[in-house]
Image (cartoon, rainbow, N blue to C red; front, side, top):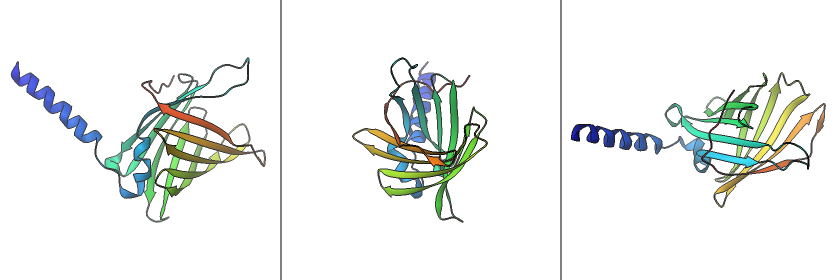
Length: 172
């Protein structure tokens, strides 16, 4: 019985130790984003509610960040890997979606709490070819402001606030 208890304690501490491992210096801006978050979108009256659940995690021994997210329990979702590309001297990422399109882009760190992502969109059926989003972490939450280049014109920025969540990212 004591051996099983001791083994259980060892597993818990090993898991906690792994979860607290550091990120590469170039990824340090993402440290406060690690964990699970949710945003309940502002939608016009009479339209269905929309909720985005997002999980940010350390990946590849701290050389990358993996994000997963799903909207409305898997109606739409995506996964990305963010990493430092030495040849480009830049943060780069790839984002793959359940809608059959993907993006590739770069990120510019503005401060230890804020970054901008610039994306090229491939195979989007709605005419979106580029995305620009700014994320800022403050007071235990983060705000994302996003614009889309759709049919040759930039949309007005849309902002969403993400707060800590215990929900799960779901894919159908």
